[in-house]
Image 1 (cartoon, rainbow, N blue to C red):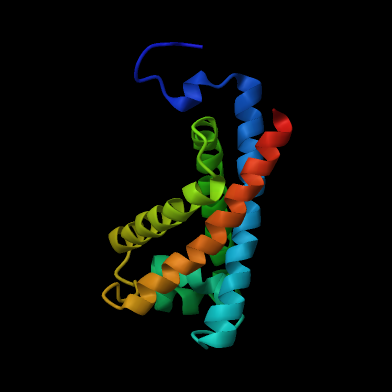
Image 2: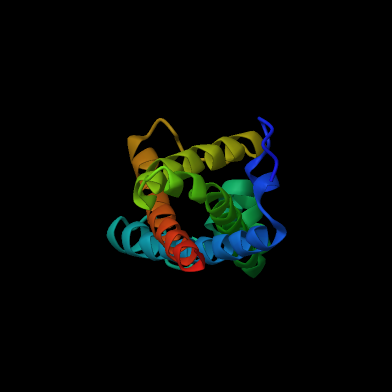
Length: 171
């Protein structure tokens, strides 16, 4: 391992460690992807009646490309939305898994890392939506922001706990 300042976290991982870290991050990310959709089904569909259940998979398509594209794609909007949702969940899971060992060594609980991580992810993803699309929610509406944070807590906390558990088994 290199001791030079500025060496990235990835550069300090051995090939086997990196492979295992990616695997753990993918598993954690997938668990988080499922959990956030469960939250959306219960809260956005069941309690708040924001959309029908079938709207959940296509939601990422509409946010990214707009409602007209989402409507024009038909059933493919569900496929594309699911791919977008799961792909980003997997990527963010791997990113968390890469950085989690540093927090673990410093005695920080996974949930305490996951909560600000969720907020950062929501902000980054919605800044990305603003950049690539004119079809975004009203970010001046506190319900949009609070609902977004809550849904991302339901992604990040289970994801972080899975990553913590699987990495603890590895050590």
